[in-house]
Image (cartoon, rainbow, N blue to C red; front, side):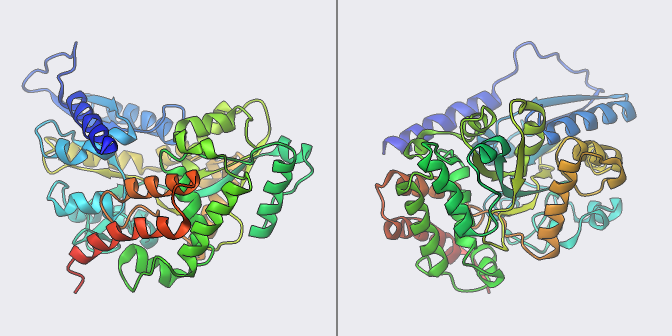
Length: 431
């Protein structure tokens, strides 16, 4: 109950922050056109830098338009989007998370503009491969087909970041199997070092759980869980392996019990500071690490022992139904997909979808893009674990926290995350 009340208070506070008038803002002349744009990328990350360049390009090509950009937090937008988009405070264009539980849910509520005709007219459907279109298109709220309700313009996937200096100092090599991965982690534990930086108050810990589940899964399993194209059993071999292995890693000291109180940002900073030899998380950290890690050499490798990886096309640009200047929003999306901006994104450590790859010189970024292309070519994209149902993100955060804390057994945790999944799935008309 305390968690519920606290959540309500935080949501209410976030809504007030969003709808409150901005002190010091200047009244716009009635005939002045304004593009209201919100996103939540770090200004030092690849996407943040690329979108800054896109804004500059937009202002250059639209001298009669004022861009009102506001940086909003991921959690703020995640929690308040339905209320904001249903008000006259909606921006013209906004970054939003993709998947059934987020963009799919809002499309069903009638809060997002159907972009299908625009996508064809402007050629977005030719720029994005069919696999990357998966998260842009929704039918009855389920991703993969139907109308366009968002546009992705970069790729992302979960990987293992590692500290090369700590690996060398402890005499370990990059692992290629799950057994080798565990042996590396045991070496660090024996040296008194917790191997994995983990933040369990947000998404990172559930992504480790999902990677372990995926190591025992196949494409049919993913389609059943994510796209409702088959039966799902939360006590099957894959889910059971993931939950039991996660608990085992905590008992062996591979994951610190204090991870239950660590947010994603603190996890990333601890890796940047050289406090942990490894961190399992997404490519959205890559550009930031290129700029901010200066005290040691680092690299990445794919999560060992699985052909499937959490990942997808990146977050979406959505155009709210209540947007006042949709044509300007479409122009901005065009610019973010241009080779000029995509090349900037790539050179800053992002994964472009329409760049001139000859313009990307950094060998680390070339490896990043090469690994993503390998995942795409081998049909290895498995999306994210919280996508199947609205609100499922919070369910997984709570369940994995309880598992790490030891207050739920693997079986109890799987029961805990099963009920909300089936409650939503059973509410759908799946034909």
